[in-house]
Image (cartoon, rainbow, N blue to C red; front, side, top):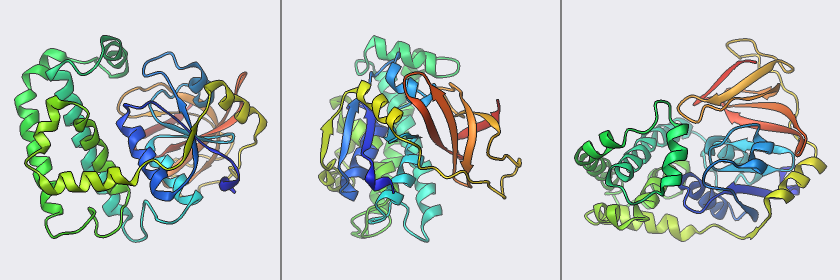
Length: 306
């Protein structure tokens, strides 16, 4: 059903999380439309679609909008099951590696904040507003030596994981675990200030190059305003579904607000449409985008009564 609508990725080139999704699209051989969003706020067209969620990337299929790479990966597996990003029987292993890899990203960002010269002042000011308590750049500079220690430890673990000759982290096939571990490495490779840290790790660099070699698939650029037309003219394909296992007994029709539990906690308010153990979808209306259904992962997000 989703294959009948175009896949639209709202992203910007330097976003590591967007790179994670771009490679997933290439892996699955899916054609897609590329919409470049501003690196910093305001993001008027994207906000009209999401209702306030401001992280990157966001994936749109018609009037369905998917926030966070976890929700995006799950819908991509539904669009094109082969090869699976979450292989059967390996879901917990993949999620564990994804969670561990998030620490690599935090290490990379802290290094960049501490070293300086990587991000523009405009970018830094925007991120100061996103992160609760702001960004303590003085502390980031002070912990650079420790972040280098952490990075070496983490890269050593990746090198050991690949030491038996396997091509990818869980064996011979790429999974979401590889893409999650890859995107911080890709980020570190963007700057000569941190690229040098990768040099002692031959297997990690070879694995990184294999992932990069997958590419981004076939895509065409698209104007942000056009994505609002797509949403207005489409109808969500999400079927209202009650989750009998919901620990708080939420039901379709409930008014809820959803936001990340770490930073950029801009709540998205709407009417619950469907949910299960992994995902929650809420309906909202916008004067520019019309009626859309916005999808979030359950894990890593807060769902509260509106």
